[in-house]
Image (cartoon, rainbow, N blue to C red; front, side, top):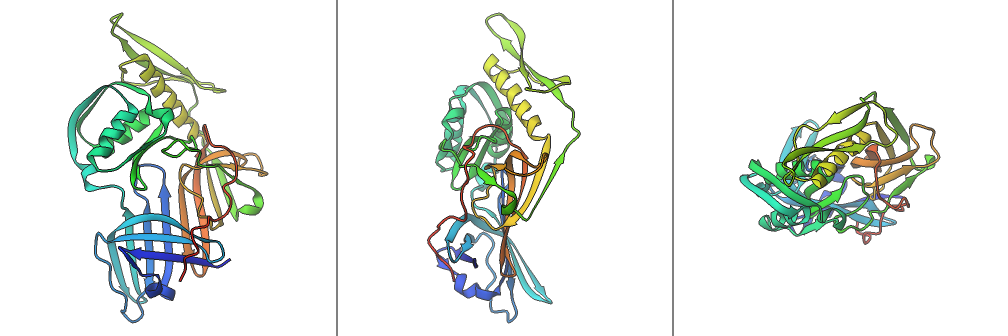
Length: 344
């Protein structure tokens, strides 16, 4: 299998110009609001490569000549470095989804609404389509304040309450359950199944982190004019009870917050790092089942960060995982997808 790439700068295909000058492509896909990144290392042996301007838009496809290429993202150049010995240009870019408008501070409140309605409102303000998993879109929000806080930070905070990823990704504002193995439309992502022959190396660790038998959260009962408590019992867990610090507007919100914190603690119980031959279907938030491995590695995980690298004539993929929770269909996503057979 021969690795291949395609790079578009704006509407211009620059793949042929780069040719054998492209020494390295690194694409990192992350699961939070932190931007996905692209790094290109280019041989500048005769100073014939034009430096990209800051803010230039790059689209990158990678894969194999035999099976075609897959679009890995749209990126905005934020930094370019030049080295004279050896003559090298390094281009760094971040995902183009996060507009500057997301970073502007706002003060407002949200009352008697749903998670889906909040995401739709914010998406419209930034001229993005909302793409929300129906399973979380209907969750009720009694009241939440956004005080001198950017939409990006507010979405992160709101997402943590619901153990969800709320972020601009792939040209839309998405809302999905973390570790749920679903896209913003609610469609199953298609879990990966990897066996020992599929990977180069796998490294797993188990953390000696505090165990909590239950998570408690308070809510204010307006009808009874009193403060009440809900308890989320951790399955198969022993230890102290964790109490969330702030009260919630309803019993449902309190229970959601307690459950979200429990799921977050569950993912922190272990980590997995995998190196393998290049596969473009390895992506953040995708569930992966390690099948046929020893205890400690075997089982269900959720990809938190994936890195794709083409360098020295080879294509490799590596990824980091937390303990898997929830959804996914547990089936293999196959090899590199058929992206149309573009290559130079």
